[in-house]
Image (cartoon, rainbow, N blue to C red; front, top):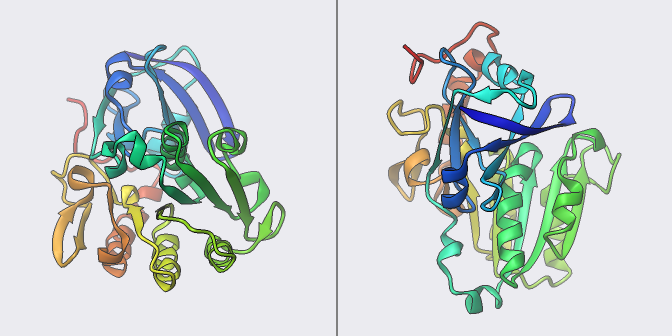
Length: 284
């Protein structure tokens, strides 16, 4: 059993949990994810590893209450336990394999949209601690949906908050802020975008104007997290790839975003059903 040692409500629909999982915490790397089951009959839910503490033996997850299973997760309280927490899964960020001296020469810009802030945080933290220059553009619809602001400020050189309605920070989309920063002469050597598929598509189009190398995370495509269900199939560089086992991160300029968005839309109706339970990976 995996005990919830801390729970924090970040917004009316987003919950952060710190969970005891010592072996997972020791092995986790930025960019990876895990799978949780709330109870014996629970659905397998893939969630990005938002943070990990090797000394405490804990991992941090952030969940948005959308469908029945995610609402069930968010309803758990401190002291209660998940039946299963499995991971780390997926491939770590390719940049964790670079020597520290190489990272210190790099200048990253992370573009996070909504819940994408959670998987951006461990990467920004890791590269900042290694001596790389790290800027973060964080986008949300409104001020009340901005999450992890203080945590992000502590692990980057510059944090740029964008809201659609202008209730906090820059009024406008993250693409507009990225274009503004690039026009100012920001010498980024690498960009990483994580968030809604449509956001990542337009970040790719924007970054392409400046020949800025860009990696995106296709974690929103994942369902069972092992490649068995095939829901995360996507064309990358003209080849079919599985986001949960070969990713979730890929070269943005090789991703067929239109195909990925069509595939994602196939499951949206089921996800919203209150009584929906995925049969893959259910307890017996």
